[in-house]
Length: 478
Length: 117
Image 1 (cartoon, rainbow over the protein chains, first blue to last red):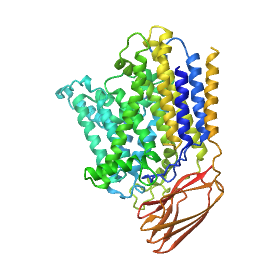
Image 2: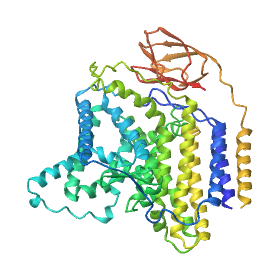
Image 3: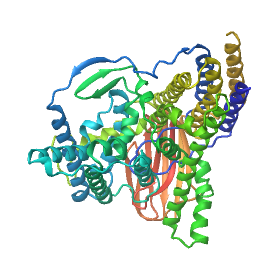
Image 4: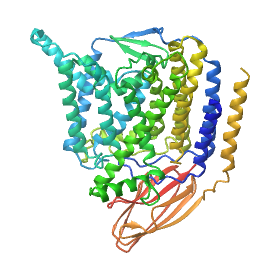
């Protein structure tokens, strides 16, 4: 039954691709070259591969949970004590240079270092690095480094006078991170003046100050693991990595295994939905369905409503329209996951949907990463190159600090076909990883293999849904 | 479990059939001859979607009733156009991808150029 349903779902998505129109590309703030929509034959192959691997996975995956207890780790090396302050200082220096460039440099987004630093290297580059090398951001995190440094100094000066941190409210969980990531997504995808270096610099300072205050209230460790939006966001991706940094040790562990150790505190489900939903909306908001042929898409109608009925200016009406789109997309992602969980709760053994949502939410981490890779890989590869000339001339005033100020972006580094393969591979690998994580968790949740497998028909449907939707967004059919 | 691969095979065939059914894709020209007319700072007839095969050539003529600069992103070609004047571009399509052709100072998209592999 489920199989037939899945085939129908993918078939429907494929049909949608058939009537696809080319997406009207918008002039994105920083981008010089845009991805072409994936062609139909690649869409067909990807959808077919996803179906085949899913069915094979159901039949051949292991029969006893592997990651529910401590996974075997292999110690690779001891991390020298000095590395922590050195990395922290580098992080603080990069932060200071970026903010200074934003405040004092050119107002032109493409000649100022800050917008590229924030939207390309930080927002897109760090997730890639985290998924490969573990939680590297924790070492370079500037606000964490400042807090640690301050703590060290206070300790030296006589730490007895320092009051104990407040207890972190359990209900809060990862909710501060949900708010932070949603605000950043709003800034990136909705706000009109998003690449203005002055505004970005001011927001960076504001964010840093809020983190420092919160860390001084709730304790550096607690807040940085729960409330620091970027720290939490990058940490989730790092759980997929085969490397694990902790207590001045570097361990090797099986890839994905770290995700199974995610503590599903309050707000974790919402955070994953915001992560996937915002990336999905970025893809969707470039499509025909949203923009329409000549402003007749969903965005245009919403804008008319906000400017006509509510009397907003055209610019604010468009922002309101995009806000609605972003929120609805996050809701859509949450709905897909929720339907899967609801179905799973009826598979047997009386598990409450809330409990299942928390216990299976980690299987969405690879999906979130797959969406990031599929949507931003080319941005990192092409626009990332611009750092070569931006770092030489961070203010955009004609300086040439390292002699590479005349460098330009080589758009032939990887062909359009190469980008397609990376995008599709990311979705397929993310899909399989999500299935594997959910499968392993099901073996821990359910008392017998039969019920576990039955519950996983539902997670499989959810994963096929996310993957087909990802392919659909890449195909330019939306 | 012999049933699983068979079901998968059936699904694969179904999907491929659906997609192949919609085949006969329009072939992309290797020579692109395009004209854009800018009226009141906007492209006449809306934003065009231009297509050319990678390795082909592009001949583009832009006529404008406002003085500005025409910018082809990615290829980074810039040409000034006077009020009532014309800017002509001739270049080989050697980078594949999607590129915006923009009326630079007005920040108005004139056309999208897709160079297909």
